[in-house]
Length: 150
Image 1: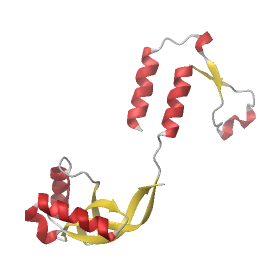
Image 2 (image 1 turned 90 degrees about the vertical axis):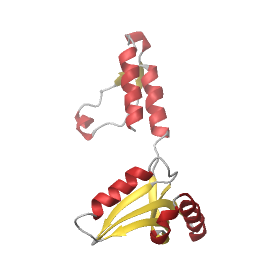
Image 3 (image 1 turned 90 degrees about the horizontal axis):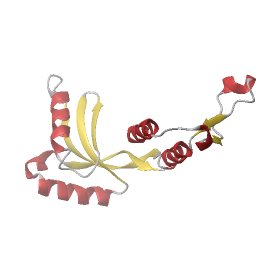
């Protein structure tokens, strides 16, 4: 969403808007405008196109029961959080799945992926430990709430 906002700002800055280039666009009206029924939004056609693109590219996720691959768990209060965040930072470039750092008292955990089936998670675990054999002792499949596109 930040990228889309940045694109809109750049386009606005580079366009020379003229009244003849503007078109009326229907937009959701805030409740406060109910007292002013004749308000009309006028904007350049390019802005209407960008707003439509932003609305259509909006990804909405839902949480469902699924599986993740857990690669770290510690309840050492002095160091666990720092270790979990460091592990996440070190793996970001190497892992093609979403990495989740979670605090589930009293444990800090690092889990990877959003897998619908245990078989998918097991297959990913197998690939992960091939890539990072030193982590085999702490890597296993766990049930979790996962995020999937709606």
